[in-house]
Image (tube, rainbow, N blue to C red; front, side, top):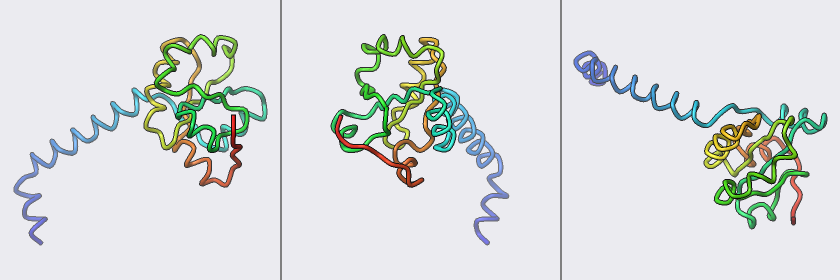
Length: 137
C-alpha cells in the first residue's frame, strides 16, 4: 500500500523518470540501427543477399561462428571497412556476442552507405535458436 501512496504523492517525479527512460531507450535503439532475427538472416543468406560480419575478437570467432561470416573485430572495423566494398548491393548483417558492439559497428557501416542490419541478440540468439556454428577460421 505504501507504494501507491508514494506514487500518488510523487507523480511528477515518476513521470519524469519514465520519460527519461523512454528517451534513453529511443536514443539507444535509433543509434544502433535496424535489427533482424535469426529466421530473416537465414533467409537472406540462403538467397545470397547478405554478408555476415562478425565483430567479435578473433579468438571468440574461432571458437564458433556463423558459416560464411567474415571476422572483422569491432576495434579494427574503421581501418578495414574497405574490405566490404565488394559487398555493396547486399545487406551487411553485423553479429557480435549479445549486441554490445554491433550497434556502433552498424552505425559506422551505415555512415559508409552500406545497407546494414544487426542480428538481434547476437551469436547468443543464433545458438539459442539451435542454429549451427562452425569453428576455426
